[in-house]
Image 1 (cartoon, one colour):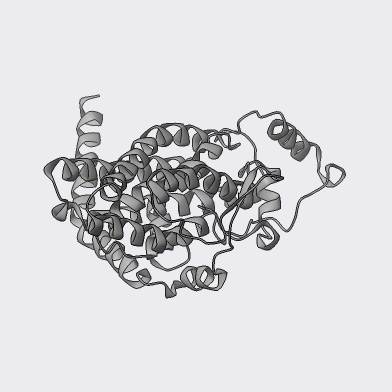
Image 2 (cartoon, rainbow, N blue to C red):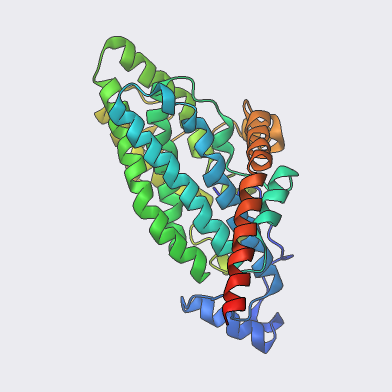
Length: 330
């Protein structure tokens, strides 16, 4: 999900025979579930792959504020407005945690932001779809954050310590996001016929973009093998997608909504739901920058960065003065 189309820096998984002693010691720590910390030795390819994934994850949290922030002033009640404000604020905090964790690998926040603005780093494809009405806000909280939780709970066991610890804190807040989204869509599904129609429409439109969040099928995800060997990823794209479908289908049925995919059927032999593949050509088109909102999302981020330059400059000037006063006092 946060590694959509990320190519690992490595050319392939090394066998133990091809590793030197230092590399074997590193892999032994990974295999024994010992966290890698910032001052530990790590392969350069491991560090670069983490920077790419954590940077994209941080960008996703920040850009993810945009589809929902658009509805803060149009929330149907004061309570819903307060809930949405809290959620959007949380997403900003999640980005902060992840940028800070990435900085422990020797990259600066400004460098990561510059890569995003130049189109050299991505964010999750789901945020390039519009939120057309209030039902979409409920569906985003329920489906999008629900998919994020499936991925992020697994990432709590990722091998890099700062990333793992950030995930533990983020997951606690994401569970609130998913619950409030489901409650919002439930009120519409159990409301008037028009409200139920809007809820159904939102689920229909966002279902396939949500399951595309996990990335291509494993057979097409050619760069996952090394990330799995290093335990940067601990579950495959298809495993995570299946888990999300299995937990979400009963929730849709409880709401009395039609399943958004006619291919969804319980498979007794597998003990899982079967479901249709999304249109992967749409996924790759969105990743390439041709989605409904790609241009607007990136323009909004660049404008916010440029408009906020005076705030950053003021904070840095204040920090320099504070440091200078401290040195003078000593």
